[in-house]
Length: 72
Image 1 (tube, rainbow, N blue to C red):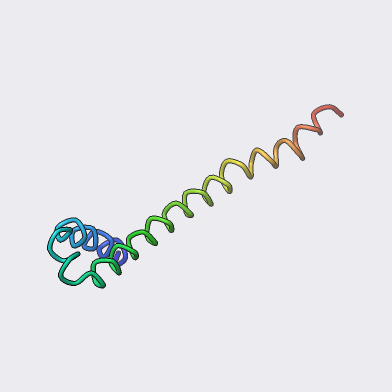
Image 2 (image 1 turned 135 degrees about the vertical axis):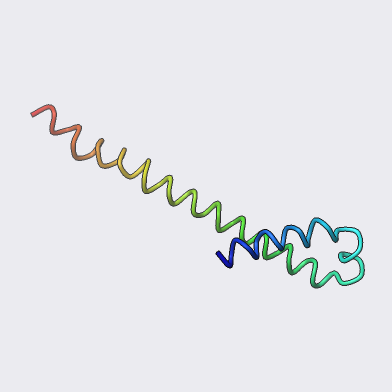
């Protein structure tokens, strides 16, 4: 819950201060932007892992272990 709240607040900070904060204090703006990018990478990694476990894993299992048994 805390991570989701921070993620939303960070988006509000980054998008509302593009013109002011990025020029006056770029270290804070780029730090927040970098953390948001890492958050998106975590989300993409989670989606890829879910796809591998729940789609490719069962397809591999069925094609290697169950499908050949149907011919015997």
